[in-house]
Length: 161
Length: 161
Image (cartoon, rainbow over all chains, first blue to last red):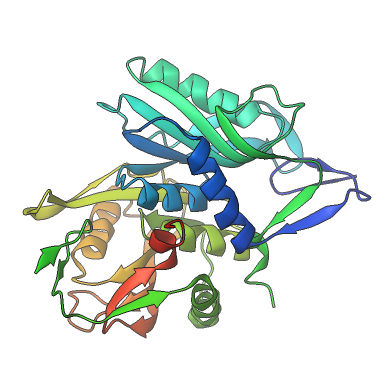
């Protein structure tokens, strides 16, 4: 068993699957068909949510596209809780969409929503991801695919030689 | 003449050119060949720099990938100066790479660097963009192509039907 940079345990025998840019576009179209709300701002959970936030910001013509950062591990040591930092200014944003690539354990998304709800009690928070694991502790409002394999996203692969 | 969402004046006769994901990958590889420094953090100027920051963060294995926001226009009215907000926490980051898709007038990049240098005098700031206009008021440390046409980036086009 190895621990990935994102802090998820990965059995070496787990099947890996490459997730290409063209699948990303297809799935984002599916996602936008599911999303039945309008938003005042989009918050990307970095790093994985950044590309989604960029594309959805353009799609919905929302310039208020922000990022938020989290740490769940320090080296290989799992922290007792996810630390959330670089919280964007959401004053006046009534409806906010939080995006991430995958909701795996759910700990990150849950903590981000908790921190944002405490800081911005006037705002409503929705969430969207491309992948979702049924075992996660929280289900995003909208998601596209169940994660059954280890996903190698194009953004971590396509600059390799 | 129309004014785009990004606030740049666009002559209707200006040649438009589509910039695909595959060109993006090619150019990011060129960019990483030019970049001869290591960094402690990457700051994306939202929205245009988000995809670049994601890919470079993965490439350099930097988890400290942050975003910063700017406003240069309100509606069609050019503000006297670019407003910079959602400034990330860069305490302890000695070398920081700021990324954007295009350095056009240069006002945004110049203001972002100014604000960050004032707030983090201990840090050194470098900048990188895919496109650069020779008429810009600042030249990024590294850039790939001169911007001579109106560029339609894939992230603003590929979710259209």
